[in-house]
Length: 355
Image (cartoon, rainbow, N blue to C red; front, side, top):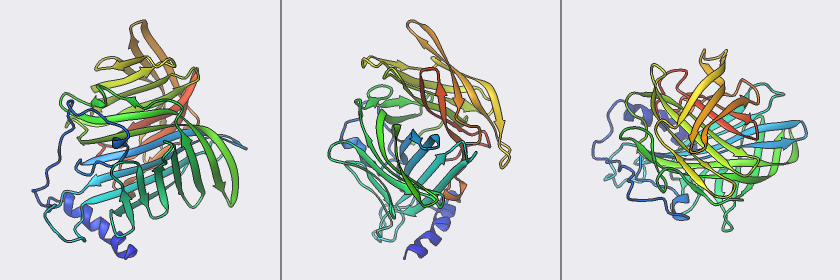
C-alpha cells in the first residue's frame, strides 16, 4: 500500500497542475477579522490551500555549532471534496529535514511526501501532531514540541521547550504579504532545545535554540512575485526579530514586513516600507547556478531610528533542492548577527517559486 501510494503521487500532482482537478473545490481566504487563537491554531487547517510547521535552529555539538531545519507542509489538493471514496486525494503532507555542518560544507538533508491517510501521513486538527511514517512533530501537553526526522547521514531527536509566549505576527496573526495577499502567521522564538543528534552511527547529546513558524494561507504570493527573503533572529538579550520581503522578477519589492519583540515583551509590527534588504556578498550554487545574497544587510525603521544588521552565514552552501517533493530550489541557512543568531531563507533565486 505504501509503495502504491508513493507511485500515485506524481500522477496526482501532474493531474492537478494540468487542470484536470475538479473546479468545485473552494479555498477560503484568511481574514483580518479571524485572529489567531491558541492553542487551537497549533493544529492543522485543512480547508486552506497550504500551511507549514517550520522549525529552524542552532545546535551545539562536539565539533562546533550546526544549523538544523525540520519542516512539515500540508497542502489541500484541488480535487472534488464531494467524492466519497477514501481513496480520493484531498491532503498532501510533505516534510524536509536538513543539517548544516560547516565541517561537511553543504547541507545534508532528507525529504518525504505522502497523501494523508492510510497510516502514511496525518496532520491533526486542534494541536500540533503531524507525521509521515516515523517522522513526527508533536506538541506535548506541557506545551513543548518533540521532533524526530533524519536522512541517510543523520537523525534528529529533539525536545523544544518554549521560554516565551507565542508571537502573533501582523494584526493579531493576520500578516499581509502583498496588496491583497495575506496569511495567518505566528512564531515561537527562543525555543530551548535538548536532544540527540546521530551521525555515522554515533549519537551525542546536543543543546541549542530554535524558532518555530506557523503559517497558513490560500493566497500567499502576489502574481508579480517570484520569491521572498525571510529571517527569524533570536537575539542574546531575549528579543526576537522577524523580517521579510516579497520580490518581483526585477528584484523590486512587492511587500515587506515583520516584527521586533523586545526582551521586555514590547512589540513593534513592521509594515510595508519598514524593512530593506541589501546584498553584501553573493554565492553561486555549483549545482543549480542560482546566485544567493548569503551575506545581507537588513535595515529596520523603528521609532528610535533605523536599525542596521548584517546577516552572515555559518557557511555558504546551505542550498536545498526540494523539487523531488514539489517544492522550489532555495537557500535556507544558519546565520549570525551582532548580538544574536537565527536563520535566513532565500527563495526564488533559481527561478520563480511555485508553491
